[in-house]
Length: 304
Image (cartoon, rainbow, N blue to C red; front, side, top):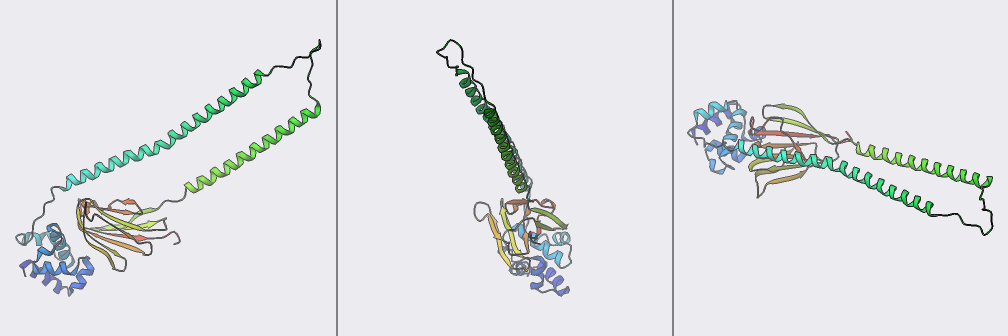
């Protein structure tokens, strides 16, 4: 056992905490806590997690992490974080590209509507021209007699024409009313509320979100590099605990629709993305400010 391990263990015992109590408080697996106390860092997911777990351990037992790192720096493996700004830059670039594509998709429907209107006008104009040419081509029939024949409409024929016109007008009005009703129904369907993911509270490295206006809760955790995560429900049952690595085991998808709460313990938030029902969740606490984060998402279904 190392001096650091002895110091941490003494602080834990002084607070009358068992390893099980410490595991429940930090969400770090018990075998990693034992490894820290024994100085067995080879069993950890990586050097980065050694420092992250020691920091969480120290905070839980009431020690100042920075003082612990300074006092026992010869025993703690160092980690390199120089690549964080570069990775953050790549993430921002991907976001800018996605934003540009979304703008194109917003404009595309408007362009299609304009093309459709122009096409409809062209068809109507062609039909009108054809009707006009047909009427002009009709010539009055010549009578074999000397005097021209005059064609007069009777009163009954004029009345019939007026009735037909009234029927056509009423039919068009009914059709327009039906179209208006269909458009109003479509607008009501379009205006259905979208799901909301809002920040309920945020403090230190812990953030609580609330999920509303949806009848499903599908959680997806994706690694853009390499990260350690622990995914639990509100009762503390772990659905996944381990390392996610891009190109290998880079994501985990879990259906929490029957749960009231999901909790994600993230070891490296700079290389971890969270999606709820395919909508990306933005960190309330910037990853550069707190690399290790605890995220809680409370599910509030539509019927509540």
